[in-house]
Length: 361
Image 1 (cartoon, rainbow, N blue to C red):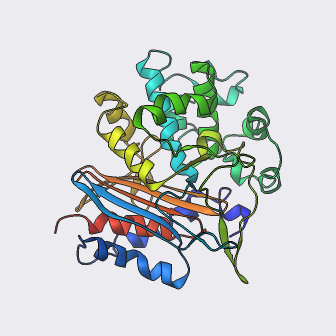
Image 2: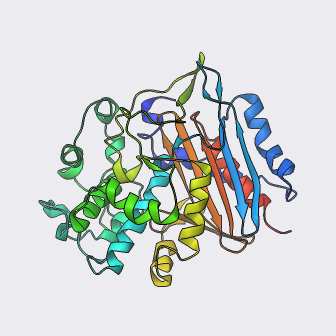
Image 3: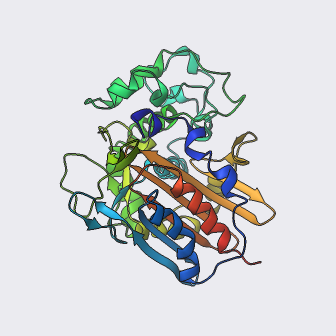
């Protein structure tokens, strides 16, 4: 998968496989082996490698890894392998904004211009809520033609924002939905401006440390990070090393790495009330009126799918060499984490299938 098909590709292409995944499951698998059997065909055919964790309120249902963390050294993936999670990062940014709202430092209905210096006039009616729900109309920076080369280069947040700040809006704010990484780049700036801390420091102190997420952080290419997976992409010649991505660029739009275990800690803390008030949590998962993709509507850094089988709160992610899915069923209190270090649609498709498989008939 090329650069424009990972972080730079459109949201529709990331999640298109989910339109089929929502109807693909038959019998409800409950045992670890039955759940693993959902993943095995993709792993055996070579389109998936990574780690999976499925857990409900009573304990772990599946905790297993497939394939290699490093193909060149033949090192196997494990439950402790660290993967880039791409746009799954966005919910951490959304929660950060809501925490700052609880502290009286901002309001999600504030205009962006209140917190972003030198915001262009075209953004005058855009609110933080529009950024959180992708209803701003601001063009997606990772879809711009020159992003495919810019992603290789040292790029400051100011330089990244300048790439889209003067471009015309794609539509009138709050009038429709369109996925744009630019929204969460700006929200990262808001977190820093309002809190007075670097984004990485804020999420570590306010999100990761309180939940004991010791294996999660902002990925930095130059840092020696134990148990970090190498990322791969499919090609006409087989699996290849993924293209380089300067991880200073995505910030709160897609820069985090994590493990399956840490992401279950996140789900349990977030939906268990350890981070946000009940009112803020309700805001987080209340979607806008617009359909986003595969029948889902976008809330704040999260997608919400309502179906006869129940509600799923979820998000996927794609970045060079990695794909991810993180889903939660509020009725069964089940978390599903699928992390992959091989680009493709398996992570999100398998994630939805596993989430459905844990529901009662």
